[in-house]
Length: 563
Image 1 (tube, rainbow, N blue to C red):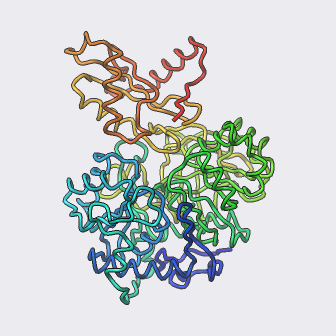
Image 2 (cartoon, helix red, strand yellow):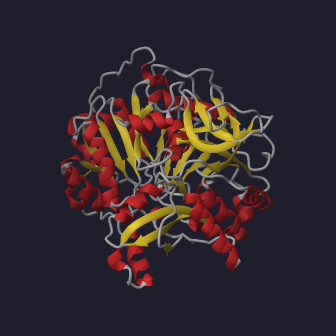
Image 3 (cartoon, rainbow, N blue to C red):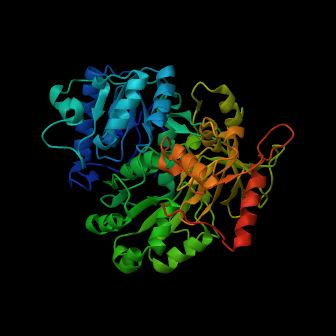
């Protein structure tokens, strides 16, 4: 379908503005609100995006290389807010709408330290947290705007806290002409579109600089895998737009194919099933815990035949989809094509994907490598290995991110001089070109597809006076994939404290300050010392082995968080 990647194009709802070939969007519905039933056609999106851009420029002074932050659940105006910011030349940084005040404050501080952070777009359900975090970093309430098209808790009598909604903004500022942003040759490869936060291979979240070309290139990669004409069909936008998978694949790749995004603000499984049927949704990007529910939830078993009337294709990503779960899904939904995708924030999402009509993927393959992507597997010395041999997965692609914002040390650890991203994942390629991801060399814990850096929880727990030392690991979980478990050495003055009481206190200390997926659902165990090597490095492997041994002695293969 596409044979090249534009080098002077900004991400835009207008195919002509992007300067490259796409399916004709004229007259197609692009966005559907599942709560209000409101719809935006391509023409609506184009007009509203321009009006929002004009209003952002007038009200916020938003312009080239400024930053607009978004802290909101999925909303019909989320894509338009992004495109409007791009139309002014600005950069967008999306934040997890479940973040606590402290977590959002951290992201906003990083942004405001290195850029002009001109505004924060949020949602009534997230407003209290947004106001507190914004105040801490010096963002005035006049610079906070509310998405309001699918409000569930908004009184029609007025705007919460007197904050301006996007609708109010558009009424206050008539649309004005905007200058066309012209880039130098290959300018799209350098022009930053997104600052997405990722833990990388270790440590606290870092701002990943992702260019316009990277996103467009990745969309083209996805479309080369999924090259059938699906114009007029519908895709479920249930994965969060703030996440790189939702941002690039769900939002942009789907809409570029004229697949209407059926926008779901929050995942609730039985409502999810209702939405499939009500809106006749055919295409899905999901994470493994959602597939678990489609296989094991009683409501799915009752309605699987009805669901299959509409469901055609699933791309599963963010965490591996095991062979056993894949087989169970295939047995229950034999008419639905399900495949995996592999990528990360640093590659602007997918670099491998199950091709359409590829037949059943071998084993638990993550997919085949996309066009214009170079992948190599290297051993510990950095030497490339042959087919079938295990090693670290390295990626070079036009969709690779530029670097970590003002973090040369972390950048050097992940982005090498030859342009390869070191993923921190261990895998191999079979002779037929299928990629298999078998383990993580990096320390990250994957909870329901979300990245959790152990160092973040360790640092937080160490700030509690009862904790003298700590190590956090990921432990298996039937539903979430992994959950966090902490091994704690008590401070001397807490040595005589009841462990059950202290367990509850520390668990509460985490849950009060961290987003839900970072909670210690794997439990807390108190030790006399944390295993370390002679240089002081935490030996997480020893603790993982300890945990496995304890489960084996009790006859339990894994736990279930029931998140």
